[in-house]
Image (cartoon, chains in turn orange, brown):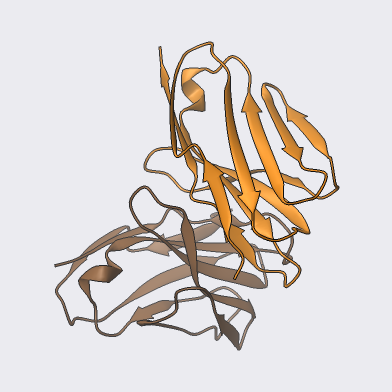
Length: 110
Length: 112
């Protein structure tokens, strides 16, 4: 079945530093979604990417979908303590099943 | 709007007991999902439903059952609780298969 891998598993950064998490799928995706889960909370939808090579920005967050539609990344510029949480990608395959990656837990030191 | 509501928020079960995790949504979404999240891990799909009366297995369905008699409700049943089922369970819904999923606050279940 489809596998979605995320790296790194954990990342500690100093407030103000940048952060990137990478998502790789074993199969070509029709689209990819990103979610954020605050500690003790539930996943909250951030964005969906559909087109090959697509780049979308939300303030300090930049999302990218690879040309081959098998990988994606989330980059946060100048992290803040409010960015703390776990970031999940979720890839949808041709069979329309959504598979979540294992997540990257971001910790920010003030 | 309440969105997706899950009850209970916490529960401790003994091995072999049974229980039902409740999930209801007030957004008139056709698609509903049950996931489990083990500590430090991602979400694994247990069961899903594309509408009232229709359910299907996800990646990890063993030990669980679901029903979908109404659009609003999608309960998850554990018949014979096992320690391996200790996890956080999330219910989610979406208006269309490729649309964003809306999650409930989760049920934290411990089986001892």
